[in-house]
Image (cartoon, rainbow, N blue to C red; front, side, top):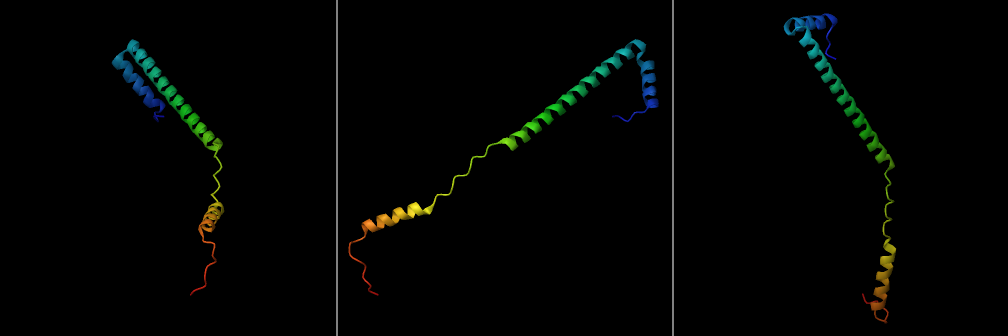
Length: 99
């Protein structure tokens, strides 16, 4: 994680022992351990929640019911109605062939 070897850790603990003393060093190490434990727990919980949300999102995308698209309105009924209206409005006489 921090890429600290054994000798570096031993040097830090020895320096801490000299500066803080045996009683206070144990409290500091214990407190630091708790902080690291809480940080790891929070990171683990965050990872779990993110993975759960992603899987739920993928599940929702796969299982959404897409309503069938409405069929395009056929122009035939409208054209038929327009033709019927034109016939009703037309005069009874046949058209003349005057050109």
